[in-house]
Image 1: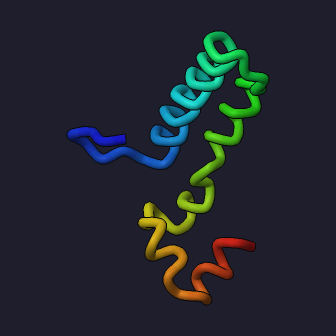
Image 2: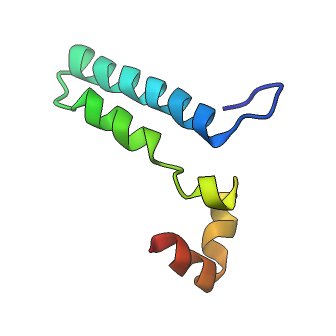
Image 3: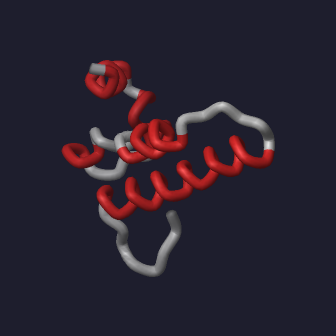
Length: 74
């Protein structure tokens, strides 16, 4: 998320998990959804897990080079 200071992967993942959980709850309560908000939050927490090792890398760069794309998919 955009901020005036640098954000680490841990902070980013937690913020994404909060937003994802809230959106899942809204979907369930307001739109008769059937999502597991806990599972949505858990998946959100791990969505950038590889960046703990590689650092933040824009998606187009991750998948532009076939060798890099292959390593990310492992």
